[in-house]
Length: 150
Image: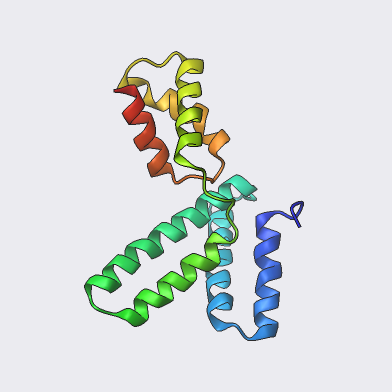
């Protein structure tokens, strides 16, 4: 299973959802695959796993924002729909990176790049992001880099 790229996993999962009649899963996977296809067409490229993971994280972030809005609007139906979609999308991402592991990676990148001030944030981010590879949201990574460069 590990050798299959994420896009293939999404497609296989979609076929299974179609056969089983799982509408939420089918709709969520179709939407994710459509988002991937859209980027690929716009950029005339084929997305690798890292790019697909970043896109899935963006989709999850959008759902989390929609989930907050649904809660504020007192719409449990919309809230649970967003929660279900988040849960489905998260199954295609690697396990989240523990904060200590992220902190260690950022510290190593700071040492490696010789970064000393918040103005070096870009250099550190460039060094850290490939190592994080979808296991932590970009916002968490940049917050950690900012904190450690203070």
